[in-house]
Length: 73
Image 1: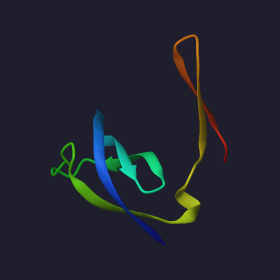
Image 2: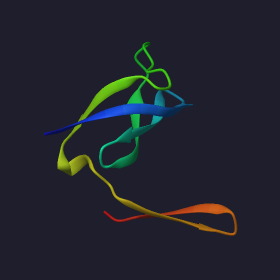
Image 3: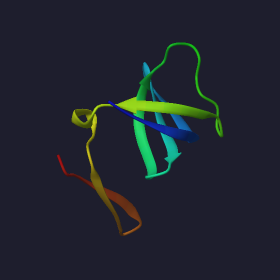
């Protein structure tokens, strides 16, 4: 199990979940978090925990002003 300190950059409500963009020591990460009533605010610090099996790496590039992502699972 891994833990990283993170700071919330952005949040988006996606139905019953929030998509959070966070800044960490290893770069910017995106992850979904179940909406449980308390939502992290922008610039709020929070620890994130995950197992290596939960990680999916994406290669992002911009083409024709569109963000393209490729899943490297």
